[in-house]
Length: 285
Image 1 (cartoon, rainbow, N blue to C red):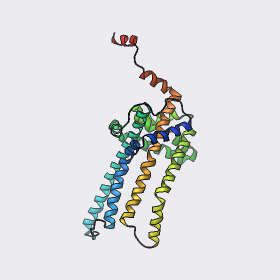
Image 2: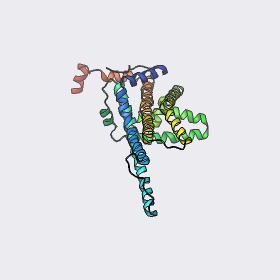
Image 3: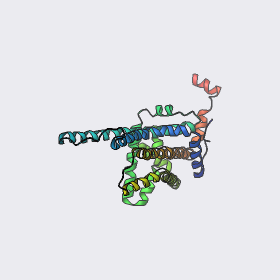
């Protein structure tokens, strides 16, 4: 059974459907979003354990300059590899979330594995689209604030368009410009809502640990490994719980714009109807 009704939706209905879809498929979206942040969490906790001596190992003593430079080079290379892996996983997670929303929207079953399977080699395209969108919006903000905000709203559905229509990076931005024409204000309100939710999650999960860290600095003490691990865990939870909302909302906005401008609901209904006997006979001749 479809989780979403194929019909034109108001802004309120888009937001209501976003939270309803997220609530009914909570573990699906959390499971998809958690993968890149879980990698970050493991590395952060491991680094904290080494830094605080949680494993009982003494801190490394300074060595010869050649050894120190080798260690620095290794850290830099490792950091670059980690960033590339993280961006790839983050792009794959965003693409998988879009495919999951699409399956639910069109009445199909969505799973974590099935959503990632549909990503295939499109993760790098997500990153490329996001880079081009950032550059475009950045230029707009450099000129004046208002053009930057407008471009932010007009390029909001570029990634869903790229994934669901299999268009290239530049073409997906052009497609987003076409779909969002006349709806920039609604898109801006969605952006503001997601920002407010992210800020609230940050307050709930991060502020207590920020306060404890500040108190430790004033007391000239260092945080224990357990406290640092909890701090990283709270950041992980805030990212995983809030992260899917943005992608779900703009994936639904993408389909809503297609329904409004291109009668996508009628197209999908016609495509889903079984072929009539006359059509079947014509197809065999």
